[in-house]
Length: 323
Ligand code: SF4
Ligand code: SF4
Image (cartoon, rainbow, N blue to C red; front, side, top):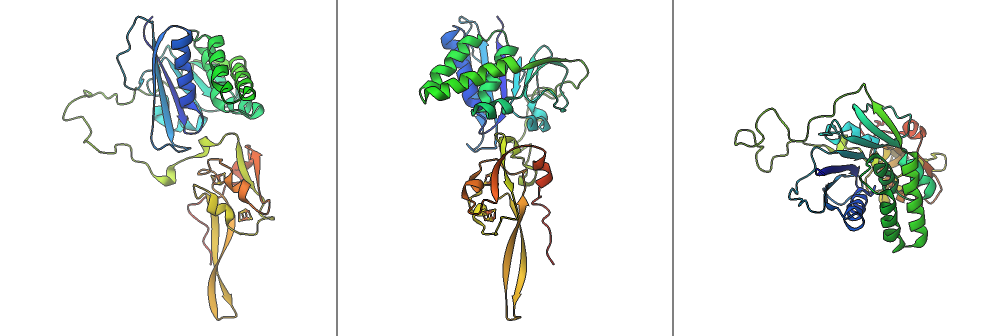
């Protein structure tokens, strides 16, 4: 068997690292194969990109490569928002298979080839679990090398250390992901981008290598998008109940509440600033729901994500100007 490469593309908080770890352990400990797994991520923070890599080979084939899987046979994308990054699909083999956390009617541009769609978020919300085990179910369906029963048994063993109820819910989530994943063969679609780092020029060489320490793909907080971190729920604001106390702003780790401040003149003698909550910039909201738990007036509630998020979006930049 040639070495098989699996890559998970995700966002911190969705459980991709754990899913990859449990899959690799299943392949080694329960299927007698050889496998290696590691993840690559920045700060351990919800909302930051994470990639997890698995290499699988026969038991007697040593795996000596320890670099990221740049040309995966199996590629799982944990959130549709990740399609905005060209590197997400980079290097997917033409004979490879893509697994996407998306409903069957999702409209993103899928690349040519075999694709499995699974609405992992809906399953996880219904089973009160995380999306990672639902996606593992879809991965097991898409990749016949994986013994689905062995993987389910591994999940049961892992989660039963925490609670039998959690184990049962995760195994159910896994089988729902397996059974509800829908296969599509995309005939008309874009080619996946070339592998990361692939250029027409030689990869190595003093003329082509980036300078040490150079940031070749600079980012910016304004363009950052944390919406992929939400686990199916978002805070909904009812302005009629809000008294502008500011508690939500104090607990929000990502400063995504949008305020308007205005000068108030008191009998013409002195001025003070008064702030009014306008809404939430959902681009930066990772769905931690601390604001909901802290709001004293019930103006913020936990709601299942839907079209309303777009309707209630209030952008942080540019802020509404006050006169
Ligand atoms: S859920 Fe609330 S506290 Fe958490 S990031 Fe979103 S707005 Fe901020
Ligand atoms: S905590 Fe609640 S009442 Fe206070 S400003 Fe935020 S939304 Fe309004």
